[in-house]
Image (cartoon, rainbow, N blue to C red; front, side):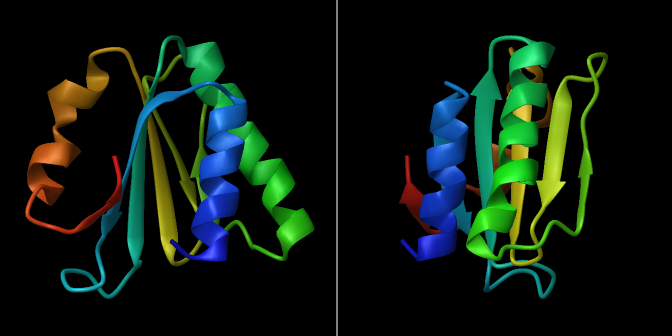
Length: 110
C-alpha cells in the first residue's frame, strides 16, 4: 500500500470507522486510482472521519479536490485526486452497494 493510502487509512482509523476496504480502480476509471470505502455508526462520526481526512492530509502534502459531508447525509465523500474516500452511515453502504460494483477489482485491504 502506498504512503498516501496509509495516511488516509490511519486518519479513518482515528475516527473509529469500521470495515475499511480499498479497491484498486486503475483499470476501470481514468479519474482516480483507489476507492476507499468504510462504515460509520452515525452521521456525526462519518462527518468527523471526513473532517480528519480533509484537515489532516495537508500535513502530508495531499490536496483535497472536493468533499461532501453534513449531519443530515448518510453518504460522505472526500476527493483527494487519485483517491476517493466514501464513508457510509449504517446500512446505507449496502443500499448503494459500491462494494458489489467494485467486487471484481483488486482489494488492497479488507
